[in-house]
Image 1 (cartoon, rainbow, N blue to C red):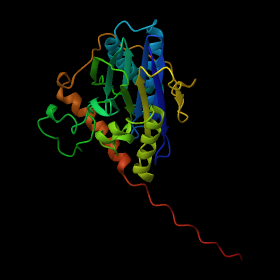
Image 2 (cartoon, rainbow, N blue to C red; image 1 turned 180 degrees about the vertical axis):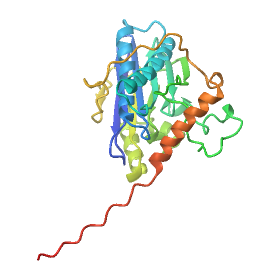
Image 3 (tube, one colour; image 1 turned 90 degrees about the horizontal axis):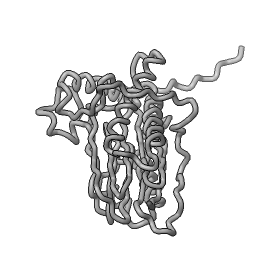
Image 4 (cartoon, rainbow, N blue to C red; image 1 turned 135 degrees about the vertical axis):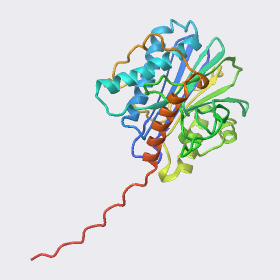
Length: 315
């Protein structure tokens, strides 16, 4: 199994980076995972850490040397990750649960299987052409799920994420066959929020993967400006040539697996994956209200800086 992985992350215009990303692999399987902590909630970065840690640890435990069923692995692990965030919040007596989006992908047996919850995305590009990209769990990207937009809710508001008492909604892609040279990109909304799909696909083509990931990151940071979001990318090229450079990190990544990260908790029995149509309307509305409130908090302008004090007179 031949592949190359490159990753980059940047705080953008924010004061802290709440994105987390990571990968791990065996000789027959590879896992990529990226989580974007929701800034409107406290400890969003910890939620993202817990999510990435849960996926990585589950893969290490189960890929011997490959997963028995990548789809089942992803579905079980996203629920486990969400529940681990809930357990963390309760253990620390937090008034509000930290939340995060997540996207994860497994490449195994020459096939791609991926899962996402929220608006962290996966792009699959072949020869500069976009084959697939995940659809965000928002009114904007999934309008067919809702007859009309509820009053006062922005179209970009998410209706699911990890960390709520309600099990997260998720979508699964694949398994689908990969071809030589296919490129997979996991990214946070700091990238796609300032670039359209065609630009992302074009940016992944025509240059070495390392250069493509670095350039996409730099462009997104520049376009985001001083108010831009965190920008994180995790790219994989399948079946790279023998002389392809070894895997490397383009920029130091926040320690998703730091020793202080809390131990994960097993998902409670009986929780099954849900689709949007299977979740009752009240549960969806509660989740939307929580997320919308968090987004509104992050959009409030910061208080004006105090005027500099005038020098006092000496008496």
